[in-house]
Image 1 (spheres, rainbow, N blue to C red):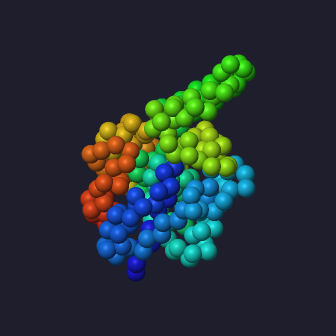
Image 2: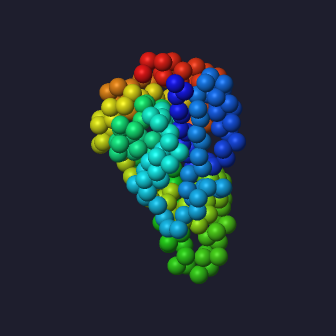
Image 3: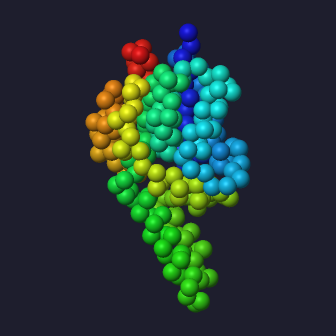
Length: 238
């Protein structure tokens, strides 16, 4: 029987980055589903800011509507947070979980979380000062560029407040409830989700294993053959 894989992307909505890995996984015999999440370019439009629970409902409906039987859910960055949340909500609907550079542990304020917090404060304070209020947009643009937050700066409509909602939702206290077999993949030099978070996930999720790769947060896009080999081994052991 062909194993279904459901890939949940992160804030970077350029699905072209996933094509190499998706091709390797298909070549290995997997059925690969790579949807565009609501709010992102070429995806369903948001009519209001979403919370994590809204994305959980959307993924579960997708699984039902597309008849994606017992998938292994692969989530990267925000997609990893969403994958873990889906597993916590209904573990019976999936066969396994792959968390890659997953932004699951939010309690420890990351650089990205601190960035959003400081930026929000800055915007509120500076706008009260008439000589400076005209500089808010250019200043924000420079800060986004310096912080590597191009995805946030380019977010349109309700996606930006949605991103702010999501980074405030921490799953740490619930991770011990995940019983689905879990493969944790991480870049050893990841600065967005530091390696220590991967080790925490390994401790909190009892039925899990950790694989560390060279590279940073985007390691999953550069090592498709090795990652595919590890996913094959993971699937064979289920």
